[in-house]
Image (cartoon, rainbow, N blue to C red; front, top):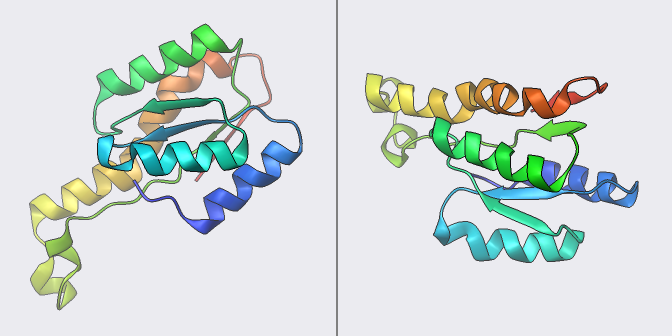
Length: 130
């Protein structure tokens, strides 16, 4: 959900080494921003992916499988917490629901993307980066 400088720099480096890059976006509000970044990087593939939806993750990797014969790297650059969880004193702001949302998006999504991309990474010396 966030497109930080560290992830952006890594994508530029891999692109400079000849890697084909695909970028994903969380919702239509972010689509234009990610398409602009894709243009800067020379990435030709920009696809939606709500990481809390197993169906969207499955669709993402099915689409990538139609375009590429495999994946060498999955970069997980996703973090989110509800605004209310970030305001004020941490203990007063955190709720069970906000905590679950933050970990679903920020942590579990790494495993979900790894599972989704596993078939495309078979037989390769690939990497999962977060």
